[in-house]
Length: 326
Ligand code: ADE
Ligand code: ZN
Figure 1 (spheres, rainbow, N blue to C red):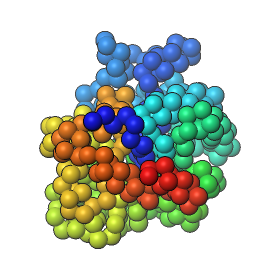
Figure 2: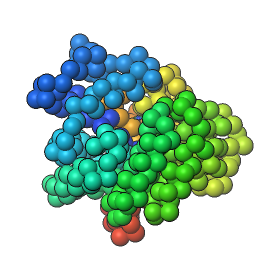
Figure 3: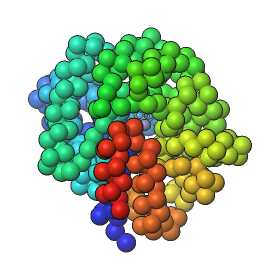
């Protein structure tokens, strides 16, 4: 069974993390930015572990310097997603990398990304929405500045707020102020947890940040009571199996807890996180899951309906997505 033609909804994609390596190399050349230590000999992103991944991620992102760069990046990323049958994506966007959290600059970057998204929608039929993303290891003060950018640009296109970065840095509650500000601006909330943090990190994100979705969250599987709570509260997990396997959380696809979480009644969805970093694509995720768990097209359709219902978009967009899944 080929998964290419299955229409897909992706809720967890870091825009810079989706940059094709060739794109970053070309831009590094144009701008004369040193990207040594970013790629291996085969030209792939190269890193040793999660913390090193974050270092390489930030080094690669340093070549992206202007709104025009982000316009080009957005086009390149959406073209790639559309080729994988993705019809709707929510991308994590970081004011940290777009003008250093200055609201005026951030609006210019945002405008450039939205323009590119309009072009991609017309050309490839893919819809993009943005989730503004503070970076945990940059600390709570920068997260507050990021939340101001989020509050200033919240609307039909910037639809969510969700923290990424190193889960070992601080506690979710340290970021509660930023999340409260985003919620008051009308944004919907998600947070990375239960990737490198254990079950407690998932509980803390749900209780201290009031998120309705969790980025990853897979390590909830280590606590059966938490699994029941997630199912009962209908918290949606943005699961990125290939990312988890590549970063060493699980040795292989059949060991990944996504199927056990789903069987326990937890709402799971499927995303790629940072596809070229993890040598994956949406088609690759679907093909590997189909093989590991004997999932057929009906299972994937059910998961995509869950994703459409958990998307942070407006109701008109959601209706269109649900119709496309039929
Ligand atoms: N930023 C980009 N990818 C990430 C991941 N998988 N976890 C945390 N922060 C990230
Ligand atoms: Zn992520």
